[in-house]
Length: 206
Image: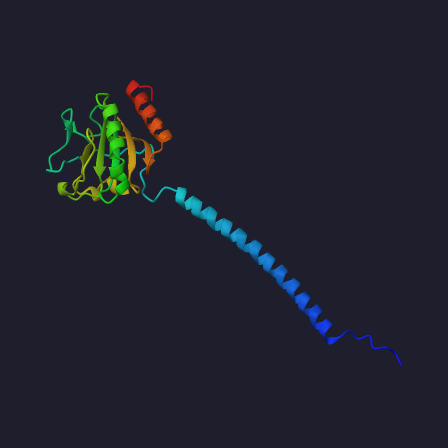
């Protein structure tokens, strides 16, 4: 009588289970790799979307029209007899600082903007802050010493509506052409870059 060589029933189920487990692990590994690639592709698209200028955003090299800056009483704010936002009145450059009344950071940075205005006083560079969300003079918040804070009547119908980040600094040359933009809070390197650019424009070497 021959010995029974059939493996115990428990061993057979164990081998099937292990085989299925290995197959499941392989399938799961493939799915993880596939999902990782998809996540990386989505992250890349997100990075591109963040770095892409918003539709209609102001572009470097664009020529923008003059505006009329008003004070809290609704009167024009003048520098040398012309409006602070008259961009083609023979000045060296205009530095427009876009702020919002609802932006705490904008007002925390007012002393820095005031220092910039004081530094450029008498150079032909006009530095002014524009509260882009102001509908009237009563909406204007406090400014820093030496820095004009203005509003523009119906500003939402001008090119100001295309400023997509506050605070932003827009540097315009004597022809009203956008030479540079600094969005958000500037770091020390960006402030140095801005000062160097303005110094070169004053010297006529830029």
